[in-house]
Each structure stands twice: as C-alpha cells, then as structure tokens.
Length: 119
Image (cartoon, rainbow, N blue to C red; front, side, top):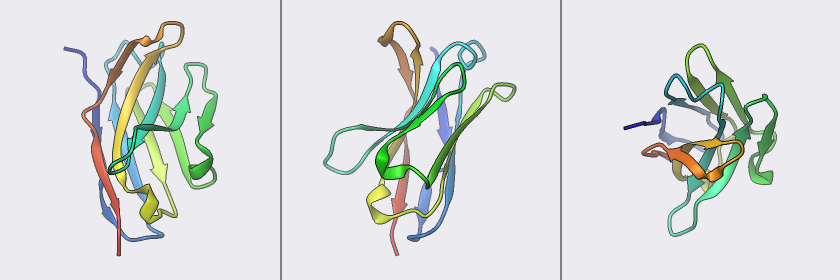
C-alpha cells in the first residue's frame, strides 16, 4: 500500500516553531503536487500550503509569511516549516500527494500529525 509518512508534530508555545516532514514513495515526488492540509478541532480540513510538481508554491492567507513549504526530491521529503505559531494553528496536519491532472481522483494522504500551540 502506498503511504505518506509524516513526522514532526508536537506541543509548542505561541511564537514557537516546528518543522513537519512527509516522506513520499520514490515515484511520487517528481510527478505529483504535494501539499499540507490541517483539520482544527471541530472544523473541516483546510489547505495550508502547496508545492507543485514544477516548484511553484501557494499558501493559505492565514499562514503567509509564517509557514514555508519545500521539497527535497533526493530525500523524497516535503517539509513544512512553521514559525510564529499561534493557538489557532492547533490542528491535525496531513500530508497530501495529488496527481497534477487527475487531482482528487488520484491522491493519497498521510495519517496525520498533531500540532498543539498552547502556553
């Protein structure tokens, strides 16, 4: 079974930083758009950041200037560097790989990693 494996979540104080990692199957990173989504408690899943197959990036307005998505194709890893964290960033964060043409008709998700921002 194809899997995305996330790591790096945890508890952090407001203003702190965390870096999430997502390891993808070897065939994915150069061919698929990769993204991070999050699901806050009691809310729907929402897009946080995308890095396209060609390298362009996009961010939710709520994280612009604070979060940075990057990909290392050699390590088959996508990162989400999160700085200046706020309590409202508390959520389960999911890694996603989506085919650039088939979109949600061909995508896989990670198992999720909890990020809690609290003093």
